[in-house]
Structures are given as structure tokens and as C-alpha cells.
Amino acid sequence: MPFAALLAQVGGLGRFQVLQTALLAVPILLMASHNLLQNFTAAVPPHRCRVPAVPSAAPAPLGATPDATSAHPQDTSRASDAVLGSPGGTSGSPGATLRSPSGVPSSGATHVTLDGTAGTPSDTHVRPDATWGSSDGSLGPTGATMGWSNVTPGSPDVTLGSCRRYVANATGGARATEPCRDGWDYDRSIYVSTIVTEWDLVCAYRQLRQMAQSIYMAGVLVGALVLGGLSDRFGRKAMLMWSYLQLGVMGTCTAFAPTYASYCVFRFAGGMALSGFGLSIACLVVEWIPTPYRAITVAITGFAYTLGQIILAGVAYAVPHWRWLQLSVSLPFFVFLLYSWWLAESARWLVLSGKADRAVKVLQRVATFNNRKEEGEKITVEMLKSNMKEELAALKSSYTISDLVRTPVIRHIFFCLSIVWFSISFSYYGLAMDLQNFGVSIYLIQVIFGAVDFPAKVVVTVSLSYVGRRLSLMVALFFAGLVIVANIFVPTELQTLRTALAVIGKGCLSASFNCVFLYTTELYPTPIRQTGLGFGSTMARVGGIVAPLVKMMDEYYPFLPPAVYGVAPVVAAVAAAFLPETLNTPLPDTIEEVENRTKQKPAGDPKEKIALQPQDRSPLKEA
Image 1 (cartoon, rainbow, N blue to C red):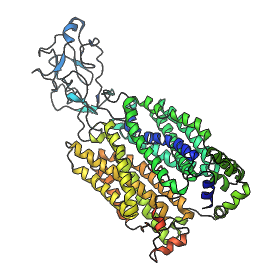
Image 2: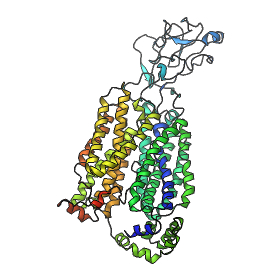
Image 3: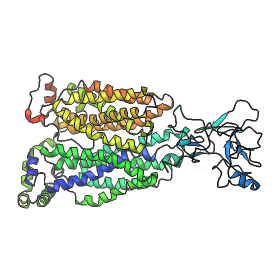
Image 4: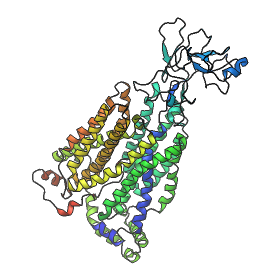
């Protein structure tokens, strides 16, 4: 290719390309942090209805259990050792009275009902169906403490006390319940502060938690549509720098958001910026790296995203407060903005945009950095235009999105790939954004979910080269769907098995991302390859938006979300079966060539076996 010859003239894969790729790969580490951040900033801690204060009671002494015991001044010494207990001395019965550790009622102690009324020892007292304190006296799930819910809100296993409370009943009949009128108390032993504890996104408001993630993914979609077009108009470097600035500012504003509504607005804008810098990085990496080295470069930048998932777990563990965590993954983008001034604009884009003189200066700068200054000085505007004559001629041809459905074979490919792209992203984020459901430390499961991508991507890379694109994609999708559905029938007590199946499913979906990205670039002809790839990426983002919304259905049918997440990859595997194989097949250059391939068996070309080097491949598949 003419432009490939120019890259070779200025040094090929020289020091400049290596350094620029490294600088572009660093922000990808934090891309996973923003995509999966709500696993930690929106974690749901165990919670219970808050016990209202009793106006007639004196402040509880230091030794009393918080929010539940109070005593008259003359009984302070005795009340300080008091615990909630039943007449038999055990805690947890609905008629519990305030007793000392010996089981004898504390004289003068105020008896508190959960609806805030004070009574006498003969009154009927009501409280959540849970014990008040753990064996070690601490609040939290270890001792099945009062009203702590150890499961995700919305599950049928939520105990009475996390979302409802008993009301006092003087008649002694059946006790009625009511919603938590005075807010909630949260177990902060693991999650110091999240948006859930900040704005009480539990019980009737729990769906707002999933809505926030969908709003963020909607921002990613809008950013791809808006900033992607602006990148073609104003340049890759300009939009990269703007996206860094926007994400840094919006991420910082998110950390200081005073309300849930403002939080969602800032997250939406941050999602737009993340999509913008992702597309710009993809273009700069692909357009500056010579073709023989694109495969390894794309693999390295892809592994940077995987490593970012592991780093996120460590950062979230070290910074448990959601505002500081949000700030920690946003401020580095101001640093990225500072050094992005050094990066070089895409010379290919400059030529195609009619800025050949600037392209010459950029190429000469790269040549100097690569110790090829003399070769760089030979490049002139006339030489540049002459070598890129074919690209400039192709630029005059007009292709639109309608070309994806205008002819029968391309239309067939378009619909099948749309199903595959949507399903992979839909199930991927359905798993990756529900870490609390596995019943183990979300920090540990985040590390495992990130680490499984390494072997998954290595295996699928080998499979793509020797087994083929279609079969590799079908097997990865079908196996992912199979293990996700199988997890529905595994008892919750078998947490190790459930976690293992989820990890396998996530690894298969990550492998599917690799497959479909490469497959898409090989199925579409050159004139509409970028358009087809862009629409596939759009369908993936739609899947990312829908995935959190489907999770809301577990309020009514707990088995339904995992069933849908599992069925989607199976349907995509069936759709992939109708796609043509592209192993050892030359890349198509025209729409007519693709249409004619169905009428005759394509001849194999040994040179095309290195099919992990598509021109338009991007390293940011999972964004």
C-alpha cells in the first residue's frame, strides 16, 4: 500500500510508534474503571429500617446498642449493659423487652417499638425479623444483625426489616407492616459510602441504581455517534484531547454531584467522552502502525483493557468511599491531556482532509525521532499526493449506511452481525455489572473476571488462525450461553461452583468480542468496512444500555434476567452459523466481490492466513 511505504520510509515500527502506542495504551487502563465503576460506587450494603428516636427518652449511654436502647437518668448504669432480649433472655423475638445481660428487665428502661412509640414492659413491642446484635457485638451480617439484608434488594430472600417494618398493635392480633418511613441504616463495614447509601437507592428506589448505569451507557452510545463524526472532521488528536478534558472535568463533577439527577447527567457526559477518546485512540494506533505489526499492537492494547479490570479492584479496595474513588479514576485524565500535546496527528487523515503540507511536517518529525531524518526530508507534498492517489480517488466515492442493506448478501451479513454484536455486549455487561450476586467478595471476583480474559483471548487467537472464524465464534457464544443458563439451576449454597461458571461464561464472552471484531472487518468490503464496524459497535452499546434494565425484572421473576442473559448468546451462535467463513480468504475490496462469493467457492490464499491484522481493527472492543 502506498501509505505503508511512507511509514516504512520514516522508520516503520520505530521508537516514535512504540512510544506513542505506549502513551495511548495507558488511558485504556482506566477505560475499564469507568465502564465497570458502578460495581463499587453503586454497591448495595446490608441495610435495615432506621429506628426512629424516642422524644421522651434520654440519649443512649455509650454501652447501649445504637438507635435501640435508652434509659432514664437514674438507670444509666444498668441500661449501659442492656441488650434487647426476649423474656427467656434471647434476642430476636417480636415481643422483646429491654433486659440486662442476666435476663432481668431493666427498671425504668424505655421500651422502643420500631414505629417510634415508647411503651412499658407490658406493652407489645414490634421489630424486624432479625436479631439485634452479632456475637461479637458489632453490626453487620456476621451475626444476622437486626434487619441486615445479606442479599440484593429485590430478591425474594430479603428479610423483613430491610424494606418494611412492623407497626405496633395493641390488640394483639395480626401485625401489619409498613415501608421504612425514617430511612435506612447501612452496614458500612465493607462499603463505607456508595451512591446507594448516599441517596437511599434501595427498596422502592432500587431501580434507580440500574438506571444510572444505563444512562452512562447511553452516553457512550451518543459519544460514538457524535464525537466519532467530529473526529473525522477535526482530527483524531483534537478530539482525543477534547475527550480527555471532558472526561476529567465530568468525572470530577460526578465526584461532587449533590443529587442523583446531577450524578446521572455528569455520568452521561463522561460516557460520551470515554467513547470519544476510545475511537480516537483506535484510529491513531491503527493509522500509525505498519500492517505487519498491527496484530501484536492491537493485542497489547487489548490486554491493557483487561489489566485495567484488575487494577480497578485494587483501587476500589484501597479507596472505599465512592466520591474519592470516582475522583481517583478521573483526575489522571488531566495528566493524559498534558502529554497528549506531544502526540502526532494521523498523517493519513491530514492528507485525506486536504492538509498535505501539515502531513509532510508530521512525517518529517516522526522520521527525525526514528533517526531517519534524511529519509524524512525527501518527502514532499507532491510525493505524498502521488503515493496516496488511490486513497484520494476512493474518497470521492460516496457510500452511506444504506449500502449495508441495499444488496442481499451484505444485508444478510448485516442482520446476522447486528444480532451477534448486541447479544455479546448484552450478556457481557449483564454478568460484569452484577458482581454482588455471586456471594463472594466483589473485589476478588473483579480480579478473577479480569484475569480470565488473558487465557480466553490467547485461546481464541489460536483458534481463529487454525479452526476458523465462524466455528470459533459459534463455540464461544454457545458455551457462554450454556454456562450462564446452567448457573440458574445451581443452588445458592454452592458459591464456588456458581462463581466458576460465571467466570467461564465471562471469559467466553470476552473471546467472542475478539472473534466478532475480526470477523466483521473481514466480512465487509473496504468501502463500507468502517460503516459496518461502526454500526456493529453501536449495536453493542445498545446491548450495554439494555442489560441493566433487564436486571430490574428480578423483582418479579428472579430467574428471568440470568435466563435472558444466557439465551441471548445461544441465539447469536445460531445467527453466526449463517455467516460465511473468511479463514484464508482475501479481504474484499468491493460490494460486488462479496455478492459474487456466494456463487463460487473462494480460492485460498496462504498470505491471508495472517488474518489477525485487519486494517480497521480497534483495540477497544469492550468499551
